[in-house]
Structures are given as C-alpha cells and as structure tokens.
Image 1 (tube, rainbow, N blue to C red):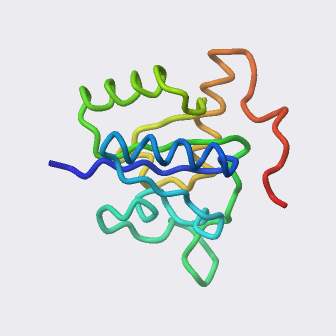
Image 2: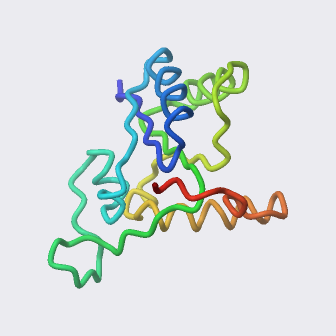
Length: 142
C-alpha cells in the first residue's frame, strides 16, 4: 500500500495548520513545502523515485529557477481513486480551507517544478472559471 501524502504550497499559516490537521486525521502525511525547495521537481520534493535535476538547468545546484506559485496549491500522492474521492469529499464536508488548485502527482508532473505545475493548473482554472487564481491574493511574504 502506497503512503498517502499531501504537499502544500503558499497557504497562509492558519489555513495550513487546519488543513495539515485534517490531512493527518485522514491518514495522509502532510508537508508544507518551503520556498527554498521550489527549484526542485515535484518528484524530488515528494521524495519518490530517483528524479534527476531539472533538464537544461545551468545553475550549479541542479535546480530550476524557483518560481513562486501565485496562489495556494495542493499536490496529492499515493492515493487510490476511491481514497482520493473520499478524501476530497471529506474536505468539502468539513471546515477546512478550500484550495482551488489541486493535482495528483503523476509521472509527467513529477518532473515539473511547483511553478510549472502552478502555471498549468492556473491556465486550466482560468479556462473553466473565467478567472485566474491568486489575482486578488495578497503576497504571503512578510
């Protein structure tokens, strides 16, 4: 059985704490990813497989430029379909902060940086809703 894990990006502290507690209550490991790791691939951040540094990187550390996602984002890994459906349904039924941008970790996006995933999810969100997430959001850097 795969370990269920949730990676959180750019959530305000209070929301991060509530969502982290919810994830643990529902059997998932949770990790708020610090900005220092945004230049790594999602596979590297999740600690799965043997993911090399991002292709074409000129930096000495083998990392991509660390683009900061423009809105809170959640990446889920290790969930079977029925577990994922139950987890998301429970999120909707409890008082946890909604996270508009969610993705399952896949073999394709595991090679992306958080910034690359954000751009993909934001484009999809805008196509479906007519608005880009995070436009009215205040910067969480302080």
